[in-house]
Length: 271
Image 1 (cartoon, rainbow, N blue to C red):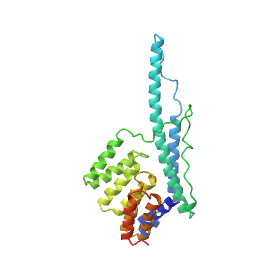
Image 2 (image 1 turned 180 degrees about the vertical axis):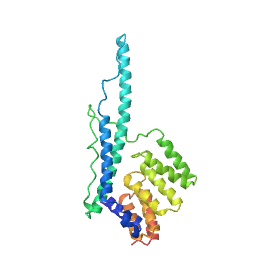
Image 3 (image 1 turned 60 degrees about the horizontal axis):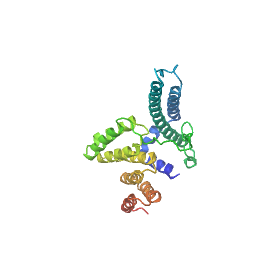
């Protein structure tokens, strides 16, 4: 529930009062986004359909030749399966996050009670299955695409070197190129730091919010939540900043971010 409260705070704080009405997303916009998601799901389903007779040849002059051919075919199929599984996991994660965001915005538009929203159900149903031998399946959620880590590291190097414009652009491109990445939360956080370096506090706060909501229990979450509260304070949203900063200790009592949050609360004279 607190997570949705933070989203509401940020949504109100980041949009100037005179622009909120014209920037508000309509039901038609949300329906269009749902249609796009539906099309993507149908594309995945088509990939599960066969395209004809299998092309694998298992012929050979001897039993050993045929066994070797079978092993090679199995290795190829295993590799393809792992790549497809990783891709589907990413689509599911990204689609679930988008649907959760759409549900939230629909309730806002219709004037409903956002506190009654539950956890968004996983796109396509429960993806956790048991392996045939009774063991849990191998977790491939932390696997990275080719070039993903290199792109992320290049953006971090630009940030460390003080090239904030380049770092912000690289990290924005990273989010588009690798949706659902295990590095997404950290990428959003670093983009917030780059935007802070450029003096764009409002967009930095949005990036910190994305970092926190993207993985509210991850390693970067305490610092992202603190930076969000501090940014709200710099934007003059003192009451929202105090609420956000108080959440740091409530959610992450044993982290270094607590001390920083308490110091910031003292600076803002939070009660």
